[in-house]
Image (cartoon, rainbow, N blue to C red):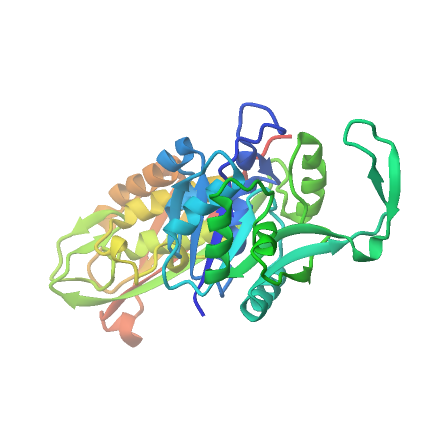
Length: 392
């Protein structure tokens, strides 16, 4: 089953106000949009993601949308939410069996909720997360009068959330209705109007929608331990190993070293950069180099690993952290690295935004033991200390 996730983030957040777009507001060190997109980047059932954004964010997307291990397409949102979803639907793969639509303003939906909604939609055609009403529900005589006209039995009242999921044909028909001028607030309403059964999936109380600034303290509380305290430090460990082969240049730390063999790999196979990349990403629990720059993606074929390191640094900063220092051990029988270490340190420091004095690189041999000792490969260990940039 091929599943596409559509993230509706094309709105201007007029109820939220302020200069910074609502979807870029930070909650516990990460933007609301990044948290919402990460739900689907990290979900094993999601094959691709289409994000509907304001035009200026499509032209200059945040770093976490530029470097991802899954196909991520960006489209310009429309005047209405349903217009944004139509634009995203048109950009989705024709292979999609199920399409999941999620509000970018809901940054805390769990992987379990996404899975249950997908399964229900695949079976029934359409499904949405919803919470049963727990308060007494009153109907007002008019929107202006605010006088109770009746009390509605709450047993049949459910409060709609996202994700909402649909088989592709169901959503196509529903969105066709939207283009006739029908005004709705969610895609499930369109599916209802086209006569499809829409199944209710039990939602989550923590799956709140951040609509106004008053919602931010609640969102911070839900984020809980995910909120980095000012100057909080974290440590990440990275490791990489590549075989030495003929016919390839040897690049380490962004320096091309004269040698009869080079490291095999999809990119330039710079094992130092790869290990440091994993250390930084690991420090902020943002996955690894394979997730963000997979060797199955042609765009990273022959890529400069210094560039990948810069991109990883952007991802780390998007999580609210900056590098304090990096320590690297290179295990290689040959060549000797002493004459190149200072240049490597400068390259790494420039890529991750620190001083050369904050980057240590040491060379070791493997004492003739194993494939490293026989000079068949080079391995690198790296440790990165990062510090929160979050302000009170």
